[in-house]
Length: 287
Image (cartoon, rainbow, N blue to C red; front, top):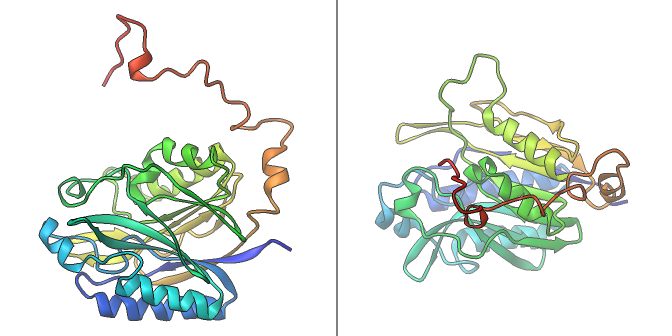
C-alpha cells in the first residue's frame, strides 16, 4: 500500500512572533500526526510572519537552515512522529533573507527551496532563487516545492514534472485577486487545478488566514489530484483549519503516465517551442 494521508495546516502566523508561531505550528503538526498524516504542509512564512517593512526587519526574524529554531523544532516533531513536513519560513544566509520552504523528514532536513517568482515588495526584501526547482525523492513519492506566486507560472509545475515530481507542494499566503466575480473559485484554486492537470501530478496549495499589517489573506487551501480535480477543499476563507486528504503518489504513477488518450508530458512538442532569444530575426515577441 502506497496511499497515505496528506495534511494541510491552514493557520494564522503572527508577524515577528517566532516562538509563538513555532508553538502554534507544532500543535497543528501533532494534531495532524494524531489524525494519521504522513506528510504535513504549513503555509508560506510560517516561522515569522510575512508583511515585513523592509529587508532589515526580515533579517531580524530570519533563521539559518537547518539549525534555526523553527526548522529544529519541526525536525524534532518529524523524528518523533515519523513525519515528512513542508513548511514556509524566513531563511537567512550570507547576510540576505530568503522566502523559503524546507522539506524535513524523520531523519532531519532534506532540502530547501527559495521562492523563484517574487511578488510585489518581495523583490526589495528577499534574495533571489538561483538554483531552480528541486524535486526530492522520498518514500512517499517525489516531492517538488513552490511558494505561492510561483503557481502563477506554468514553468513551476512543468519544471517539477519533467524531473518526475508526483506532488508539487505550495506553501502559500494567497491574497484577494481584484475583479473576482462573486461565487467564482479563487484564482489560486484554478492555478493549482490547471498545474495539476497539465502536468499529471498532485498539487497541494496550503495558505494562511487572517490580516497582517492591513493585508488580508484568503485561506482557501486545496489539495488537487493529478487529473486536475479537487481532492479536498477549498478550505474556509477566514478560519484556521486542518485539511486531510488521502493521496497515492507512487501508486498513481501507472495511470498518470499510461493514459492512452492524452499524456501532457509525453505529448509535448519541444521542437516547436521557441524562447525569446531563439525567435527568428524580425519576429517580435510582445511584452
